[in-house]
Image 1 (cartoon, one colour):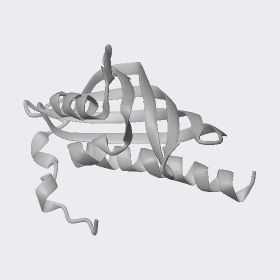
Image 2: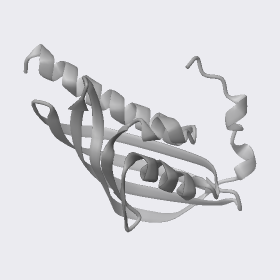
Image 3: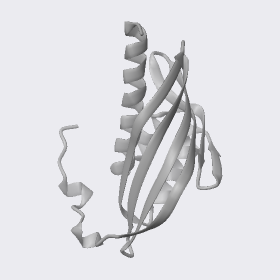
Length: 151
């Protein structure tokens, strides 16, 4: 593995980290910035195309949530020049405004492209392995506006 491939692997992992961070912070604009303009997202039985539509659909999915904790891990990446493929395991916990909690376990299958030196999602497909209840008290979560992060 040469230094360019190592740099590409780290940049793709940073892309996935920015995506996860945008989900945690319910940040539509930063989520949108993770996608190529004609990106495709397969999620919850839907096929959503275009970075703006993806960001809008994501926002509609989170309207009923107090808190979403999204963790992607264990990446397997294959890089070929300015395109790549990846697979990630994902765990997501959700606390709805009505207090109901759920857990999603799944696998992302991705394709990426490097545009102007930046890696972006071109397609992301979530296969859900498990979706079921979890017990959460919505009053136990710190409000997002009270948490301070340096950036």
